[in-house]
Image (cartoon, rainbow, N blue to C red; front, side):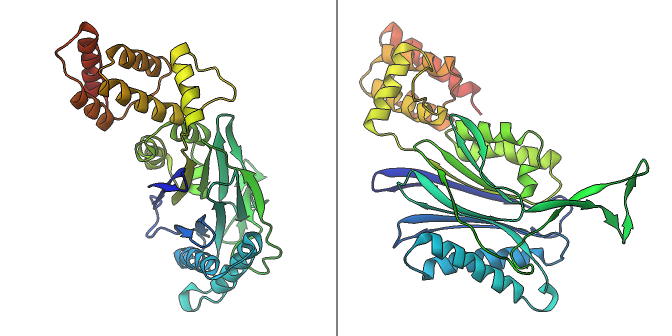
Length: 345
């Protein structure tokens, strides 16, 4: 989902998959626009799987924290802390078979256009920031190491006691204590990814995140990397919520033009690859509409050298814009696009 607000563009993508051995997905994800604040709220919860009704805890916490934020007003930090405490109380009040269920939580609030976001983390779900500098984990897990047991008996491995990670805090468990609201940068081109442990424990998750960040089409990138990895390696429910800033203002566009003309990726500050991809498509459309075949070939060569992909639907639009008949350069551009279309997924 791509959104535009006061000339600030951003996109949101969420996905949640049930673990291979689970009867029901214990995770929950939600997002909403806090209209009075012009702020985006994202929340990801992971019901603690030792309880059969873990899904009730995660669904309750998601619904409760979003509802509390929507009904409140004033200082966002205070409202976020209060909303988490309200969700904590609502989960503790679950009755019947769901009594005692608990959940982790990552809550993110971004006032649209700000160069920073606010977040709260409870448990071992995580929040990452992706930028041209790489992958940065923003949260700290609320966990400790303790001896692993089965039916009350210690689990041994080659005579030694095995240890496992255990949560020290969860929404709905005991006394939650103070809720700390932290901040982190969210600059133009940056991306936030909130995930449950079924995602961040997948092998090679940092490389998966980088793949998603660099690609223009989030849905395809998530399917090609994250979902396929979960299908083959996943052992638990896996949920993620992403928000990415995708502004392409005139200064950014001019920086990208200089890169294409110089044939280099070196510029300070660097331009994220997904922004270069969007700018490249703008340049290709402009060249196609003005019948500038030499310009099209220049952009195509640059995108190819930088390993920047073009979506199949965009290639088809460009083919419809130019004609095969014409100058030699026009025919070359047409054949180049036709080849890309045949090779693209």
